[in-house]
Image 1 (tube, one colour):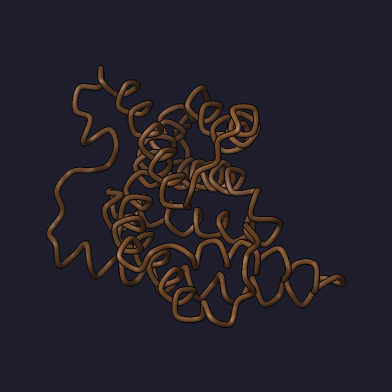
Image 2: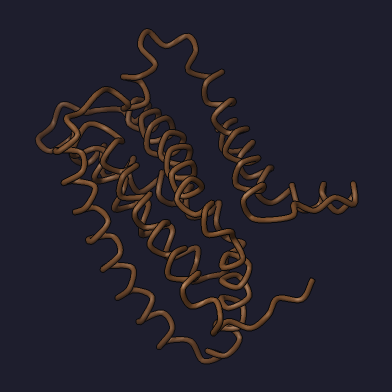
Length: 231
């Protein structure tokens, strides 16, 4: 809970702190590096007393071919479900122009990211978000939920842990608006289920990287169609 509070403080309180100090990150790249580095350091400090931190975070070695195969499945499945949900969400909104205006502004800022930074940043974000959420937080939820001696108890415990983790993950992306919050929560459900199923977060890291890299590269390719972002 302390780690989540720290995360939300950085995400939502960082803007107020930056304004007070009259400092603004020049690009999304610096923002991602700053947030991810702090969260990894905080997580490392918490797990330093675990008997095996790799096992604790679900980072034990997996065969590369197996990991890549499940990563691809996670990417395709999560992306497909999100496209369907996003379409339904947009169709249900009465003020579609306002929703799209907010998204276009966000997309415009992300499209400004240098092409050479897209893959490294997508990889870094995938590693730190999966390590923190699907590795640490999901693992702690699973360990803290009482496991009753009844049929299906393990499945119910794991499902509850995945849902709770996905809600926490989505809540950290509320600055993206209602649609962004919904998309990240759904992605959290898919990636969490994949991590539990495969007993490792490596496939989730691979799927997360593919989702972010594909989205950022697509935005870069369509940058000329987005409106200019005022400085």
